[in-house]
Length: 263
Ligand SMILES: [Fe+2]
Ligand SMILES: [Fe+2]
Image: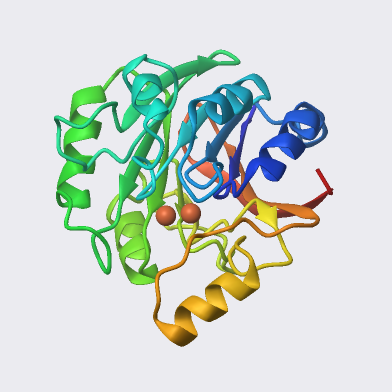
């Protein structure tokens, strides 16, 4: 039996959390999904992931939550990150930071290694993502059946470079952070399923999930402003990956875009 993994792109705002709470178990059944990984770094108002939203999403059918550069915005998440709950922060943050960047979860009979890494091009100068990934894979060797990587990065080239570097060693590689889904779903030559950015799960009537006026003013006037989540209908963007659990090869990578309605 093949194994199906649904990756959900950056969840923006409480409305998106609410829609997933109501609909994710139905979507899991409909798509025949075995495992759900979701990036939750923008779930809270004004960015970040708060402890309540993290718990709600885990109860709603998310098996592992990943994050990114906004992971430290909500202080109450630090406790969650330290608790052993399946909530990750990028693995290449300094080792003294709360939490971990990888976890193995056994779901539907298979041990799935999920890794969260952050790019360093046009982003904070964290540890080298390539070297960090080598270390994680070496450390976890023999303990998992197949692996999934969320590359939280700004530059498409950096995401592609990481995917090709680990082609055949990581079953599924997908990008997050830009909030715009790319049109390059593919299986790389070594058998890794890949999509440069799986997009955003949040309100469509905004700019990257934020109120349009806020972003326009910020870019036009170069003045700092507080991010306010846009209102209206929510869309789920992500990708569905089918993996052959015996070989670890990804057989299919299908982008997902699904209207969830108003929260
Ligand atoms: Fe981000
Ligand atoms: Fe984001």
